[in-house]
Image: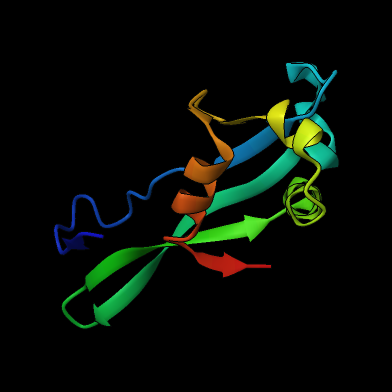
Length: 111
């Protein structure tokens, strides 16, 4: 992440991004259900020097119910369930299961 000491952008933070999973038979209207919400990516400042306002943004990921169901499907090798799952974020970007886990692995996990 980038170090920032420009006072004009110090309060500017990336927005929270929610990740969703749609299971077989689900529609986008089902995204408000807990089982369809994988997690929330958000950022916090991690200061390297508070006096000089030097910090970097640390990516955090909060797991939600859909994440737990996805983990269970993987552990139990429910391939028919996994093949039909569609993952995307609140910005509309689609992800494969592997791409989503690659992104999450870069974050500090908050349970």
